[in-house]
Structure formats: structure tokens, C-alpha cells
Length: 140
View 1: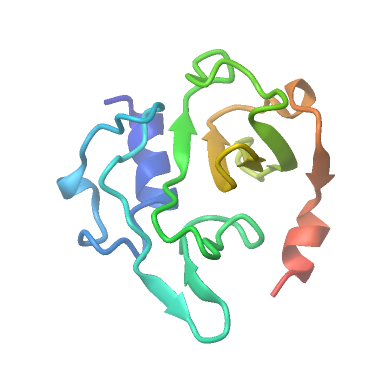
View 2: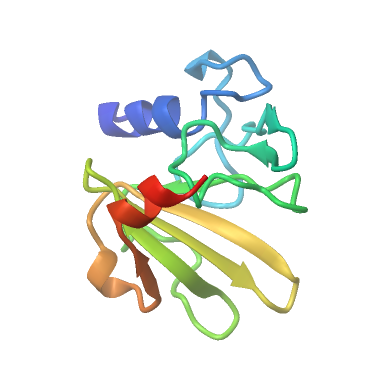
């Protein structure tokens, strides 16, 4: 496993995971990407619900989709879904201080949200509302 991928999993998925909180329990994700397929959010906030502890605010809430798992991709080109389109609609994008692109969206035909993390700056390849650092800082 590449060091950048290992670091991303440890930062974005391991904190608060019910599997133990470190990469020792890693399992390949069958739904695409290079992240951990065994990940499950284990942090709960009253009146908010379950959250992904290592993900930036606004992108970290699961809502009613308790089995949501963030998919991590090394590059936009390695994005296994192929593209964003009318079947997979991105709604928010955010470029972190580390140069990673976070995308939150919805799959309308299944009424399911998704959360993608790209380990590069691909913000210009995704057509949706861009969330700034100021927006993230303002969110509860």
C-alpha cells in the first residue's frame, strides 16, 4: 500500500471507526477506491447522529444512511464510478489544506448519498457548489 493511501485511511477513516481505530484491520473496499471497506462510523453526537470523525465538517455526517462508507481514490482518473452524471450527482466539493478533494453527492435512483475523497486537487473537474475553508469552519 502506498504511504499516501495509508496516511489518508488513517486520517479519514480510522478515527472513530468501530473496528478499532487503526489500519491493522484494513480490508479492501469492494465498492471501489483504495480506502478501507471495513470502515464503519463509530462516533455519535446527540442531536446530530453518527459522524466520520476524521472527515471535515459538512462532509462527515451520515444522516439516515448508517452504512455509508467514504470511498477514497488516488486520482480522479482512478474514480471507479466513471463519472458524475444524472445518475451520480455531486452537490458539494471542497479542497482541503492538504490538497485533497472531498465530494458529497447523491444517487437519486437509489435515494442514497455518497462521499468521495480524491487524494489530489481535482476540484476543476467536478461541477457542483464549492465549499470554502470559511464555510467548513462556520459549520457546527
